[in-house]
Image (cartoon, rainbow, N blue to C red; front, side):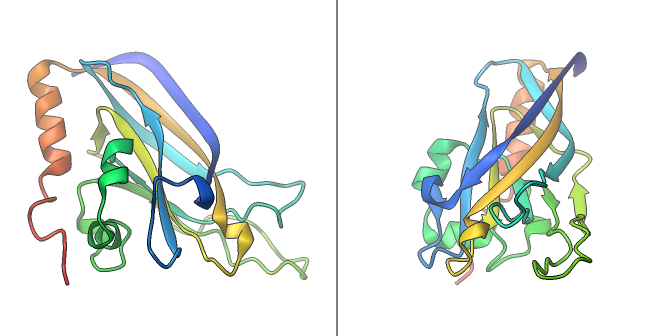
Length: 185
């Protein structure tokens, strides 16, 4: 595995009404944000953050989100039970290899007060997590709070060249816990 020296920077928004997977009650979503089907390349997430909207903080709530290695195809085929497990409703997200990291919810906002320092109070990126083809975002999308239906993000990635064997091992590692009780009823 060799670092190429190339960095990739992703920023944008995900919207509940455009998500590839949504829980039946509309409380959480998953959306694919990166597809790279080139063989022999992998990415390491080095930084992730919500992207603040300083002009109109009421328009986009800078909520927390999780980073995952699910492809668009996997999200479109995901069952509700699998989505509940992946999003942390029925399982601990920390135990899932498909979860790459978590960007915590900024300090609870109070729109009417002046003391609203919009900062992240929880943040973790798994040090050994590498993605080979896809990155997705999962987030809480409260149906009663329209502003949480849209989440802004900023992500930095380091690109690596990997051999065929390394790529297979990375894919197997990411998916290794899928069959080990992912669905709990």
